[in-house]
Length: 337
Image 1 (tube, helix red, strand yellow):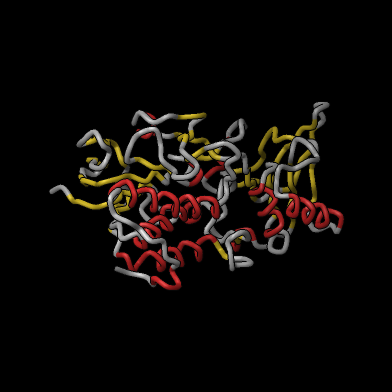
Image 2 (cartoon, helix red, strand yellow):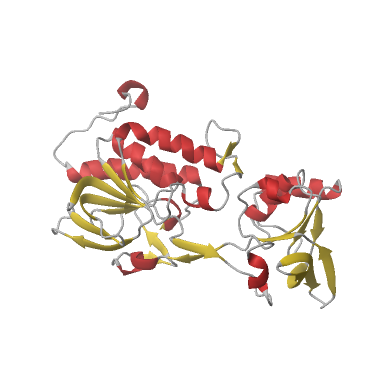
C-alpha cells in the first residue's frame, strides 16, 4: 500500500528531527526514513554521551539528550518514522516537482509532495588507520566512537587525531582514565581554538600527554587486548605508549549511496543547494545539514537547524504558491495544527 504525505525527510539525525518541527509549524505532514534502527544519526550511533556546547540556550547538553529533546519537540506533529531501512529509489510523478514516489529497501512506498535530504555524511564509517593486525583489536581495544565513558575508567587511553573529536574526548576522559595520551602528526591541532587552548593547559598541568609530532605505527597485545601502541616520528624514531584502549579519530568515510544516482548537482560528495531556500538542482528536493553545501557553509548543527526552517518555508511556498502566508513566531502561533 502506498502511503502519502507532504514531506519525506531522509535522515533522522538532529537536523532531520528539527525539520519535522519546522515542517509541522508550516502545516506540512512528514514521514522520516533512516537506515539506523533508532533515531539520532551520529549523535546516537557514535557519541551519545559527548557534551555539545554550541546549541542555543544549552551551555552543555549530551548528544543523546539533545536527540531526546528534539524527538519531544517534533512529537506534537505526529511524524511517521520508517527506521532500519534505506531510500533506494525516488521518481518524479510530474514535471513540476510536486509529487514524488519514494521507495525503501524494506519495500515501503510513499507518495510525497517534496523531499528533504538530511542524511548528514550519508552512509558513514570510520577512517581506519593502516596498521597491521588492526582487525584483531577492533572488537575489544580499538574504538572509533565513545558510547560509554565508564568503559575507560582507570584505563590507559591513547587518542589519535587532531580534530575536534580527538581534542574533545581527551578533555573529557582526562578526568576518568588513568592516563590520556594524544598522538598527532604535528603540534598544531584542527580543533576549535578554545578547545585547543584547554588541551594545551591540560598538557602543561600533566593531565594529558601530547605525543607530537608522531603517527601510529603498530599495536602490541595478546588475544585482541592492547598493551601498547607503537608510534613513530618524522625521523623514523619509535616508542611505545602504554595503552588499554586506542581511540583513532580520523574522521568518517563518506558514501552517498543511492543519493549519488538521483541526478542532483554534487560537489565533492555534497549536494549543492541554494543557500536561501536549501533547494537542490531538482524541483521539489531540498538538502539540509552536513550533506548540503554552498559558499562559506559552516558545518554546525545550528546551521542545519536554520536550513531546516528555510526548507520548510520554501516547500510551503512551492506547494501553495497562491496562498498568502503571514509569517508568525512560535510564541504567538503556538504548536500544533
